[in-house]
Image (cartoon, rainbow, N blue to C red; front, side, top):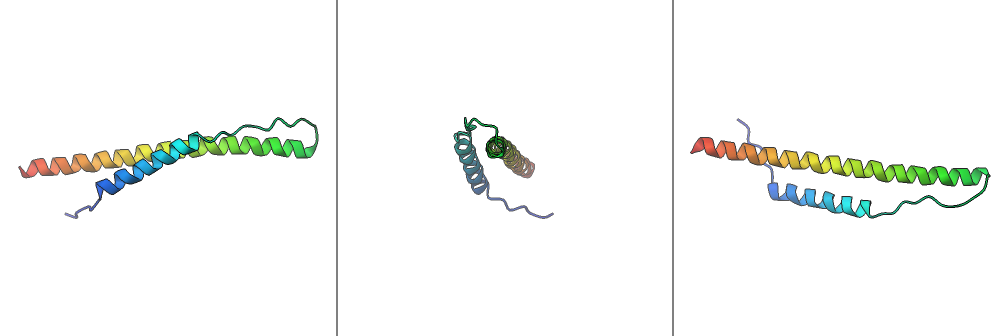
Length: 89
């Protein structure tokens, strides 16, 4: 049987970094410009504002899903290790 070498402390550290990045990202304010007009330049500026807002939401979703995934991986590894240790006793 192969042994899986995982540094749980390092994994926890990376999860904490992802959580800090999520907090930092959620603190970034993305607001649309209040420029008025009917020219193409104004339309493009508003479209870019919308894209940045969507990008922020997508990044927050990615971070949230990554954090949940790695927390589940950590829990599974710790549980598997505990189960293996109990079988030895």
